[in-house]
Amino acid sequence: MMSSENMKKKKEEETETESESTHQHETTHLSPNPDIKKKFLNHDKEKVLQGKTLQIYWYILTHNQAGVREIQKALKISSPGTVSYQINKLLKTGIISKNKKNGKYYVNEEIKKGVLGFYTRIGFIILPRFSLYLIINIFGFMAYLIFAIIYGDKFITNIGSILLLFFLVFGTAVFIFESIKIWKRRPTKSN
Image (tube, rainbow, N blue to C red; front, side, top):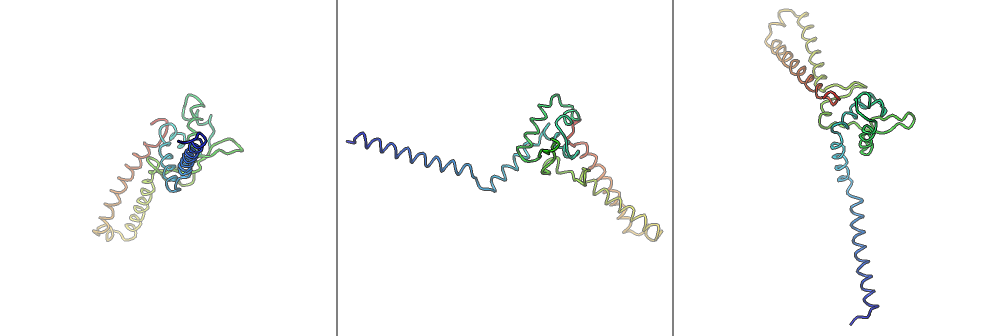
């Protein structure tokens, strides 16, 4: 038979053991592997960039900085509270930050997932990636014309130059089509 004192000690030991295992579990849960944590953060960033949040991110990205009222008016969103809510989602994931001097928000990290992966940024200009390939093709056309002027019929009637012209025409048509298609998919209010 156990005395009441021994029973109390046994209960205390069991409680301590349970709290230690719970504490170890919590510690493991609070400090996961950095690679796993990064994977979840990146997934959260992709998940956040949808709907109005994506439109607001696009607006800030294309305008360098923007305030809540400016975004509300430009995107014709009914209330500044809605804009603030979406901005807070972007702030929590670290995609944007707030300029403490003027209170405007700016892009902290460019995300290249989903629709945004089809665009490239040159300074403040954001263009569909295929536009750059189109520009390269236009330079190819210019080079073709220069060679045609310099070498005349010898160059134009050559089978190699005919094939080059065919690929330049075909490539240009494809890049124009794809650039327009992607430009129409940009995340704006009109979509």
